[in-house]
Image 1 (cartoon, rainbow, N blue to C red):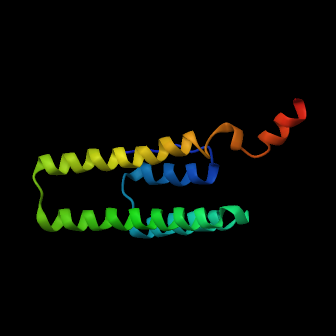
Image 2 (image 1 turned 180 degrees about the horizontal axis):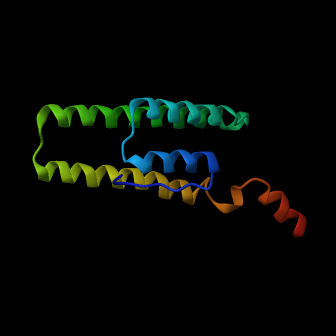
Length: 123
């Protein structure tokens, strides 16, 4: 794979490792991962996150669809190597932006399960 991801979520890391093992991801695997992602998001019951959950889920679906449409357009139009390289670089930066922002926000250690209550207990 051109772009890799590591996760501290065991079930997700297992999926990612499986996908990287053969460097080919089928449509079924994409649909399976999407279903799992939706199932885990549904487990978040905090009402104050409902709107943002819906926005996140919709945006991820939109990004996935845009990537699929780009791939189809590339196959049909045979872009120059320069355009192909530039698109690859641009998309990787866009995806990295999401991961960096995740790590800066909800991926912070202080949002890990139990950390805030543990911290308050000691102070």
